[in-house]
Amino acid sequence: MDRTEELTSRLNMTRMPRHVAIIMDGNGRWARERMKGRSEGHAEGVNSVHNITKYASDLGIGYLTLYAFSTENWNRPAPEVETLMYLIGWAIRKETPELVANNVHINLLGEIDRLPEEVRRDLEAGREATAHCTGLNLNLCLSYSSRWELTRAMRMIAEEAARGEISADMVNEETVSSHLSTAGIPDPDLLIRTGGEQRISNFLLWQIAYSELYFTPVLWPDFGHEAFLEALVDYQGRERRFGKTSDQVKEEKQN
Image (cartoon, helix red, strand yellow):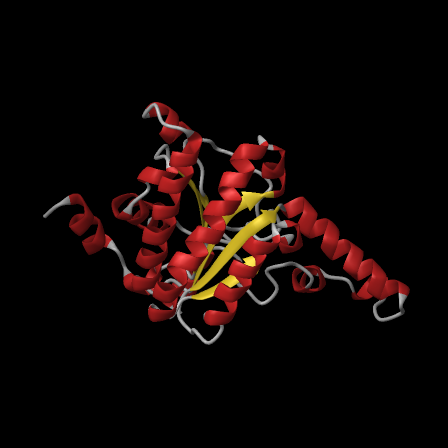
C-alpha cells in the first residue's frame, strides 16, 4: 500500500469538511528552485488547481474556495500581472468543459470589474456554462481581499441605513454575513496554506473565525493528491469545539 492509499484508508467519509479554502502560495519559489521564470511557476500552479478541484469533487466536498489573485497582487511587476491575467483566462477556457462534465459550479468572488475585459468575459462564460451544475462549488477569489470585502459590506449596510431600510439595532452577525461576497456560502471548515508561510494574508478574515488552519511547507505546484489527503486526515484528527469544552462536545456526540 503506497502513501496515498494509506491516507485514503484513514479518511472518514462521514467527517469530511463541507468547505475547504486554500491560499495557494509558492509558485514563484517553485520556479526559482528550478531555475525557471516565475511565469512557469504560475503555469504549473494552474495544473495544481485542476488536480485539487478534481480531488475535492471526487471526495464529495461541497465548497472549494481558492485565493487566485489578491487585491495586493496588483502591486506586482506589470509583466507578472499580465501573465497571471492571461493564465486565468486561458485556464478557465480550457477547464470549463471538464468542470461541466464533473458537475462543478463556478462562483466568482472579488472586484471582478478590475480584471481585463477579455478575462472577465472568459470568467463570466465559465460561470454561465456551469450555472446548472449541482456538485462542487468552486469559488475563485480574484482581485479579492478581506478588508475590501468588509469595507464594501459596511458601506452597503450604511447606505441601507441612510435610506431607512435598516436601523443600528438591527445590525448583527447575520447582517454582516449577508453583505459579504460569500453570502449563502457556509464558512470554511478547513483553511489550507501552502508554501510554508504561516499567515492569513487578508483572506476570508470574517469567515474563518472558527476554521481549522493547516500550514504546509509544500509549494503549491507540488501540492498534489497525497498532500491534500494529509491535510484532510489532519483535519479529521482535530476536535472542533466552537468555544465549548471537550466534555460538552463529547456529550453532544453521544446524544
